[in-house]
Length: 88
Image 1 (cartoon, rainbow, N blue to C red):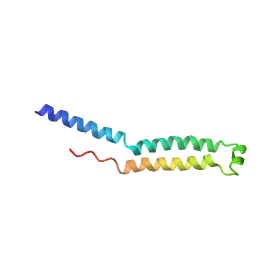
Image 2 (cartoon, rainbow, N blue to C red):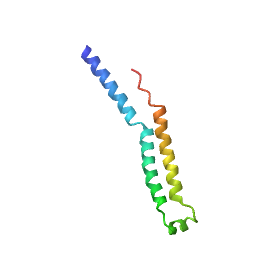
Image 3 (cartoon, one colour):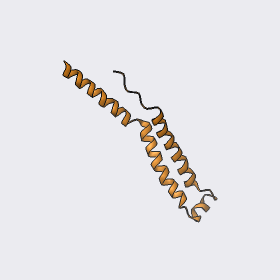
Image 4 (cartoon, one colour):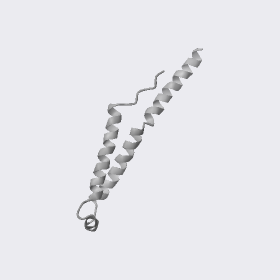
């Protein structure tokens, strides 16, 4: 009987770990942070022709910074409020 209980407790532990690993906040935060960095770099290296197309506004820079801020927000939210383990 103890073998069954040990296996069940190990499966519960693995399930809780998988739930934390695949938390949607981690995925969204990671993707927005990565894409935010890429778009921010594209904005920092924008040419004068790119700026003229957007009437002087560096759209890539502002969009990249917004994406970066949103991604960091999701990751901080995940850190401050981690996923609760499922009840036994």
